[in-house]
Image (cartoon, rainbow, N blue to C red; front, side):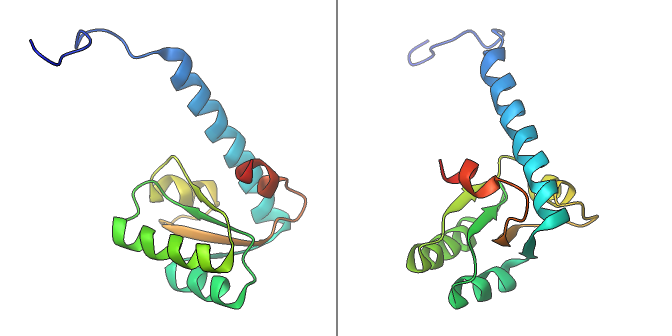
Length: 123
């Protein structure tokens, strides 16, 4: 077959999966510390308000954010010079990582508290 590079039954590289899972766990642990000791806002409208006022230090977007909404948030982030981190999981996973029982599409961190999440995600 033309253009096929690998056998469909061939397993995907487990080392790369392990690294992604480990970094996701790392972000989740730091995010839990931000929730406990820092200041944050959840939701699209609140995140835009935080960025317009210049209070936001970091914006987290879930992996399944719609493209139009993602580009709008990234545009506001560019104007306010706020870094944007794309969370690897879905909005359900981001909500769970934030300790909430609902879905979270985007969240803004104003103060990281005791966590070093800001330095890790921007690097």
